[in-house]
Each structure stands twice: as structure tokens, then as C-alpha cells.
Image 1 (cartoon, helix red, strand yellow):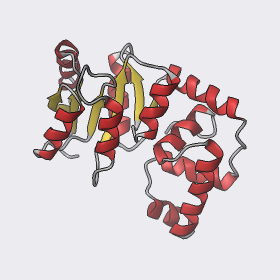
Image 2 (cartoon, rainbow, N blue to C red):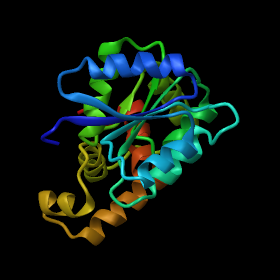
Image 3 (cartoon, rainbow, N blue to C red):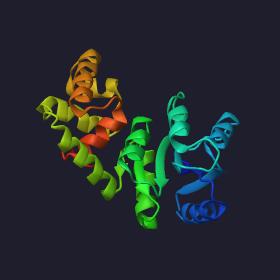
Image 4 (spheres, rainbow, N blue to C red):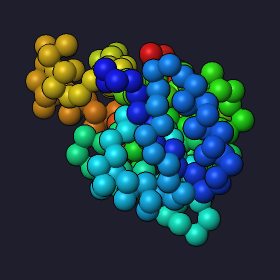
Length: 213
């Protein structure tokens, strides 16, 4: 990312996109590389060769493809950009759907510009970012589920996942096999009631099992 962090803005409101672009372009090392009015247009831009490091994604976008489905399709691509949800919606269903779809973070539109800027940088580094109200909601769900605590090794691995490390990097860091890492991740997912790395990190952060990087 020698040329800085490229951001794709996805929101169905032109005024919102204009404000986001002004904020993004005002940062010295971040540049808006494109704008889309819905998820389908965002996917077309990616197909046409736009290569953002981070996608700032709204959730509900009129009659176009909504943010959760767009996030799912983007994160399923080879070497996908990070998807950072920026929305007014903070219900449990919205949060969980976005996280399960592979979103790296979840912010609310009333977040101050400096918080959004910090989140963009964190997302570009592969870190998970949760707005405080979102983290609180996830924490409530984790506690309500009565899920068992992670073992020290599982907690260590989840922390490395939160840092953005791939399974191979984790295996080298901990001097264990990739197969062992995968086995631990299966146990972590089961204990936290999730089915993706991003969701596991989000649940771990919300429950206070790991700290934000």
C-alpha cells in the first residue's frame, strides 16, 4: 500500500457519498477510488478493475443489492478488500448478518470522522473494528448464550486471528501445524456460536476474551 489506502464508497445517498468522499480525501494517506449506489454497482466496479483496500459499505440501499449480500459476494472473492460497514442500523439481526457475511468491522453513521478514519486504517491492516454500541450488543448475545470460555491456547489463536494473521502464519508463530490451528478454530467457532473468522473475532472482542489490536 505504498500509494496509500484506497477506499470504495457504497451508499445509495449521493449526499452521504459526497460527505464521505470529502472526509476520505482529506486524509493524507487515504484516497477514494470509486463510488457505488448499491452492492451490484460495487461488484461491477470490482469486475472492471477497481482495487480498493477497504470498502465502506452501507446496509440498506433502496431497491438495489443490500450491503449484507454485497459483503458476502465481495469477501468470497480471491484476495478481497476489507469490508467496513457504515450504517444507521444497529439491530442484532443486522450486526450478526453483516459479521457472518465477512465484514471486517461495523460502525454507525453518527461516529465522528476521526473514528471512521481510524477504522479505515485498522480494516486495511486486517483488524476487526466495532463501534461501542455494536460491541455491547454482541457482548449481550454472547453472555446470554452461556457459551464456555476459551482455553488459553484458543484465546491466543483468536488474538492472532484478530491481528490479521492467516493460519500458516499462526502455525509458524506458535510452532504448531496448520491442521492444529484449524482444529482450534473449529473449537473456537463452536464455543462462540459463529462460523467465520471475522465473527469469531467480533464475538471475542465483545465478550472481552481478547483486546482490540
